[in-house]
Image (cartoon, rainbow, N blue to C red; front, side):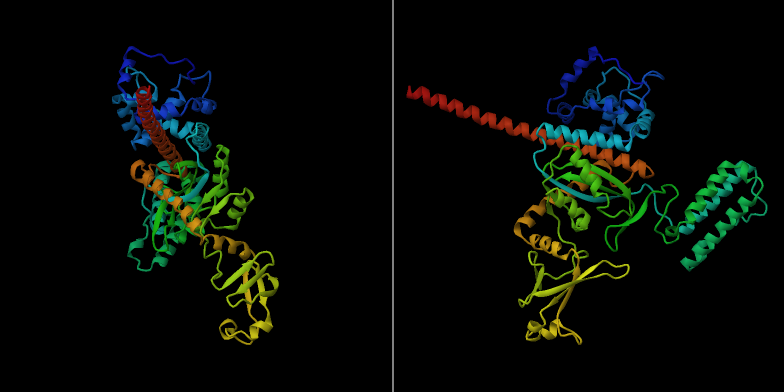
Amino acid sequence: MLKTTPKQLSLYSVLYDKIPENHILKVINKTVDFSFVNKLLEDSYSKKIGRPEKEPEMMAKLLILQYLYNLSDVRVIEEVSLNLAYMWFVGINPDEELPDASLLAKFRTQRLKDTSMDDIIQEVVHQCIEKGIIKSHGLSIDATHTAANTTKKVPERIMKHLAKKIFKTLDRENGKILSEMDTNIPDYKAMENHEEAKTVMKTYLEEVIAKVQESNEFSDMPCTQDAITEATNIISDEKFILQKGIRSLIDQDARVGYKSKTDSFFGYKVEFAMIPEERIITAIEVSDGAYVDGSKFEDLYKRTKTSGFDIKEFYGDKGYFRKPILDILKEDQVETIIPVSASVYKLDDSKFSYNKDSDQWFCERGNYTISKKCRRQKNKAAMLTYTFDKKVCINCPNINQCINGKSKVKQLSVGINAGEYYEYSQRSKTAEFQEKYKKRASHEWKNGEMKRFHGLDRARGYGLRSMTIQAKLTVLAVNLKRIASLVSSYFACFKQSFFWINIFLRNFRCELSRSA
């Protein structure tokens, strides 16, 4: 049941006067109004039934402290009970008791949902826009990786653990293991051939599953049925044997991803949209490690716009140079600051140029195309084939370099979007583009900050949901820290300006008195 009675200050609240006004938590609390959290989460509480719960705003602030200072559930409760600034921020009196650490975990796992966390982040961003803290109009999106809270295992070892789990569950429910079952698990480590080891272990596990399912007692053993279902689902996935699926029974959502062709990781990918100038994150998505950057661009883009942010420029790396993304930005008249990807635009435009008005390509010798055809091949993207003027090509001194074989005319085959990509390619070479693209570097700074100081380098729990809550709470914490920094810097500039204005006015009065 949610409390509705207002809080009262105690005699000991006078101790809060010792907290300096420029303390980060005081600046955050004065800048951001957290009262919306109660209304946002009120539907997750019963209004009449149950004991009075701690209000959501207080619990949310405890989580903010936890991720702001990278503390555990138990440690954050201990720190708040000793630190006056923490108590003041949470909104309790010094003589009041704090909730148990288990209640904090319950609030995080049961009350907070993915949509709720997104709404909280968007509301904080919206308040910053309303108060003039966010003044720029650029948006950057990029992804970073987070290691899983466990190690990856080979399929043979996972199948061994699945077999052991079936035996253990069967023994607990049935009182014994079936006599016809072979409990001697093959020693896969003794096999030199890795592929042979996987085949042997899979065959053995399938035989174990079949023996259990054939038993008469199987229908009366729900836990064993669950273990069998889990094992069946895992080994039936083709990606599992190829080591591209589940690599841990503890964290079955984590996947192997690649930071480069030779550098891999096991865990999750966190993709977030950020305002480069103010370095405030507007939206975030969490996926497994095999996620392809940019796949959830539209969701991040729409959520950023929902917060009230006016997007006029977009910054991204080559992974975001895709037709669907470019079309969305073009439709909204957003300036695109994305380097051209060589995997998308494969033309060497140092040898060719394009005129979009006449839809013609020009070679480096000045010859131009006179016709084009669209060719479609099965299971391949459509291609446009441009043909140059045969009469000009025959007399060209570079004919032997351009034309091979029996053909006497130069042809150029490009993708159907090559003309559009050519314009992006030319613009990406300008000094203005290069200067603007430097702003995207702030994304790397934010990645480093969240990993080094706020624990985003490694998952705290297991599973995609746990990782999602962790990432979104981390984003909320670093946003509030950045907001406090911006507000403090604005105040410092104002204070310094006020100081010099006073000096100017004092000198001006002195000059007036002398002249009088």
